[in-house]
Length: 367
Image 1 (cartoon, helix red, strand yellow):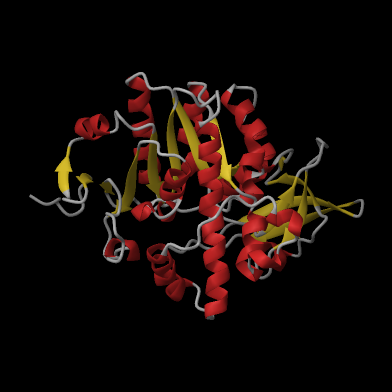
Image 2 (image 1 turned 90 degrees about the vertical axis):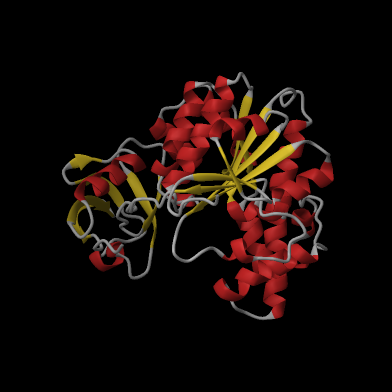
């Protein structure tokens, strides 16, 4: 019997049989690496990831959580968080979440709180965005020799993967064939770098005896194209892949991509439709904190944003919001969230030594 539309189901592929959560967990027993895909802004996906993590811990597995959201260079910060040495505010500031992630922290909060509670290692997988951005714009050959020397071993020859990337490149990117080649190189670089980070950890003394739970976007996991296949090329380690998808009227392209030589994943976990989860209202500024207790500074104002319309400028120092002192990024974001969509927020700024009140009208909510 097939899955009931709209209900949560775990399907074992390629057959598509519905299985229980307990059987699903048993199927993972022999796997040292478990890839759990996600759509970043789907809260249900992060709930599933947390559920899997807690069950693995319950069964006595020594788990490391490897995350696409963090860069390898941020490992010392991640280690301090795991060891309980940072508050949430300190962690968000040091990891530069608000200026580099572009997604509400609430989606990842419970997982990272669980990691901290159990003192689990979080492994940063990603490569600096600047490097992949350069490759996407001009190709690998355009990189300086120093940057090329830092690249991981790369395979650009998988024709099935190339077809898969092209299938959504046409829809979402457009552009010329030359542009696609650069885009494809960037996608491969992204996956190869994360596979290399995993391989290096698994072959280190710290990785010995550990189960690694990999949390990454579905595009890095489907059909084994991204991280899994590139990790396997470096070393044959047992792994399982789980792709999370939400029931919805219009399916993602990868569910209909039929040119892959392997199934979508080992398991397809269908989640119930996620209740509408509005993102926090945005003012439209990139912020920068300094070692100064008196506030935060605007580094950049986004064109046509509420901030630009209100007259905020780069270099403005934000001292308070809605009458509450602002000492760190979290203070401002809490004030904006409390105020809500379409409302006015009062900011006291310091510009060239002069205090000034700026009223910012937040954008209305669009579902």
